[in-house]
Length: 125
Image (tube, rainbow, N blue to C red; front, top):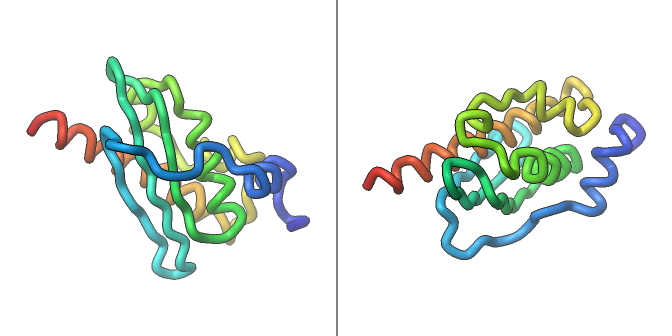
């Protein structure tokens, strides 16, 4: 794993916030059909902000690391800020990714946005 930052290695070996969440306020699964990475994100929302994120990811070390880092970085953020999260911000938060692994940061950002979309649809119904 020499091509990865120390932060990617650390979050791959010691992932944070991995696992199930009982009765999430929103959830979504996103996958990359090319490489097979699959990421499920569950969120809890209070007063318009993310209070908890849990995830389950099957994939390469950077996919697991971006899930872990993204789950930590967005806690406390207002929903609108999370919806504006870019793949570049996720990649920067893990100390950078090789070009052929940038899709992992895309998956994390997309899954979070989709979980918020699910939360908003549940809240309106």
